[in-house]
Length: 418
Image (tube, rainbow, N blue to C red; front, side, top):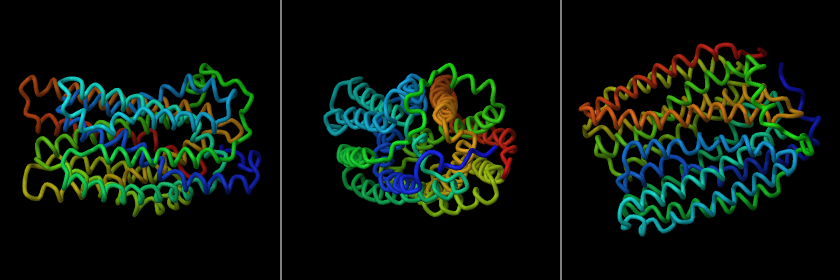
């Protein structure tokens, strides 16, 4: 059943102020988050000479770090959610400071450059994931259930626009100064500091404060809630496929297709452009038609894109093909993500959302984290056994397409009003 109307928790004016502050702060937060967790770390590790297994390990930091939400869950009833959010963001910013001296890391003897980079990224990611324990429960108090898709369409459109501006600058910077990542991490650090100042003003939802939230009670939801299990199997399969594929698509572009760091950032720009042009429309569509048809359309689209990678080779046109691939990848992923959040918010009761949101995030993220780690180890083994890297990558792309199609079986149940 849909959750009760959000007015039971915060007054209208406070909910509206929460939405405004969330929209204003999120571009800075997502810039900091993605620079320290997503494609830029992959490029830095390639520049340091890291193996596929190391790349897969770093790609697993964020999803596996979501496990930290379980022990953090015990703090939700004792401390304000806003405090948890600010402390997590602060830890993340401080942990990322060593990467502001990336030029020095490049000249360190092996394996110190890779080791320090991994440690900095791991602790920074841990701070981000701890703050996630509070972020979605706070948003749940601000959002009107019947306009969930619309809100997240707007929220994500704004930060996609910001990331486009960031990566335009980053691409031009690296095109003229290959390997000069320190300044890019510096800008992200400034964004992280800006976000701290903004989220410290978020309205505090009164629900759950003073309650004792137990890990056992949250995990028991997996046994009792069949709809939650269906949701987690579906989004877990689709998300795991995408998380395993994207970092090694970047490695393929650098090591097999021969694209430069600047070229790779052009594909990153295309990725965020795909989300920017589609998110608002996806938000309106999921509010009107429900999640199931959006899952179906975007899931088939993602599988088709993964299969299209089987034909990519080192040709003069490879860059343009990869730009198109990443644009459409995020058009499809953006729609899937809005439908995902729509369902997650319907499953979480407004009066006590944290247990549902945390257990959903942790369970799905566990599969997201294991996937790139296993993929990296499998690719290393396949190449060591004599397979060509291109054949090994193509096998990964085909498996990702199959998992994405399988994800649609449990997700077909989430129709409008269901």
